Image 1 (tube, rainbow, N blue to C red):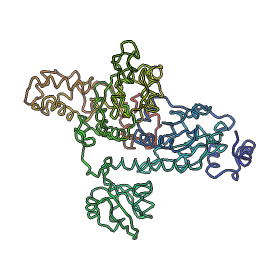
Image 2: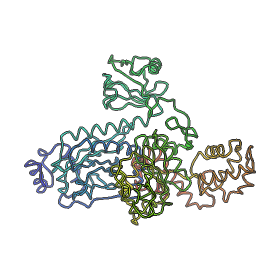
Image 3: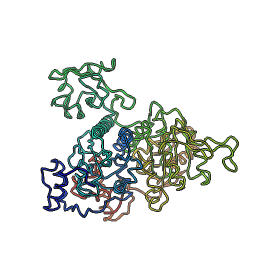
Image 4: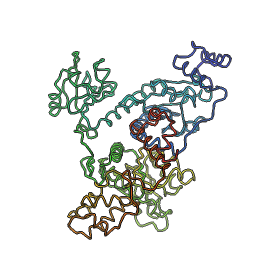
Length: 627
């Protein structure tokens, strides 16, 4: 389908005849993209088949990008409502052009091109020619690709508008795209996509610097809460940590780079500015060239101005409510922050982890952090009879089926209205019910058996210790349901991999018997044991120990007498002794890869470039596969 008229038709004819397009018929960005496609050896007449990554790799990348992905999904749903009409799709891809999420309507998903536009598809220029996602990733700036501007004819009926998303350190972290058929094209779409990308960037900025002082400023006070407000992150001594793009524009080239001082930018004394900020919401601010601003120190519930601490508290505070979730381990602390933010935005959360790692406790923490007034309703999907699951979850009316109790039942979803529904062992939910749950997630409408439908407001948290990717491959779990449940997906590590074992043990003992305590020798002896049952097993063991030393200190000798000696010794690095030289070298290499991955901010491409290895090598290290 050709929609752009004679100019592009001539460009296509010239490309077919001479092997390159005439520059006069295409914009500079589109022309350069076509030339890159030609240099890559792409043939417009023989496009390659769509390229997809494995479900496991897609899930891993979704989890790695969980923070920006959570922010993006919230904007995608808003954006989809803002763009009027039908046949629209909003997509989010990582910095490499891997499509992670889509929000679409049925008219678009039923179209012929929809099979290529699914989570897991790779939309780089190398795979999919000139297109919004891939070309924006290459250019690192917004782009619109309309109709015949696509290099491959199979996308000629699409209009794609894409904008890059940058992390606070300036690294490309994702791409946001709005696509439609050409007839549904809207002139304001590009502006809306750009605004959504900026909103995501500001969300990332606030999250990265939630432990620092955050200053919002603008020339006009009414713009302080808009996307055009400048944001500065500073430490308690007035050192600049970061500035968003709007701040750099407002400061007209003044030195707002990390490491500079507040006094290098503004004539206002920093200490006086902070003191004034404690007394009043807004205050004046003058920069070094005399420009006047209205400024405020952000102190919202999500982004409170707090002094950084050396390590997280063992018992986490969520919205002012203490919970039992220990998070002194840095990995766990990062997971808790992500869960808190997702819960406050009412995003579905999926928690993975071995049995006993604390999945339900994290779900309860999410409920506390959300600030919701309704109850926390846990449901063990594995314990419900298959024939009654739908009735238990969605309720039923009196007489709906044989054995229905008098008066019917509201159902667990309705019971959780205004609160949190926790679906444990979600991987054991029957496939037939998965379709019902998927429909519920479309509009959060409960349809009781034999009754009238009703709307509910719930935060949905799911958990599983099953390999859902394997279940999807065997047809036991729906991939489209997984994508709806894991707006945020986190994996709790087993107890043996956590650095806060001592905090957990002492926290549990204080709850079991407040008058008892653990000596350091007891903690050391406990840490040597294998905890295949994780925190749940440790709690049971501590309960046994408390019976032997009621109201006193438990030492290492008591642990050895009650629980026995450790079944195997460990090296100082935590690995079992006895491995061969080859295994040790392999572990050393994997450790080097994982260290580089962490130092690169969990960016696989950056880590691979830094070490001079392939991205697949990093992926294999993350999965624990041999190289």
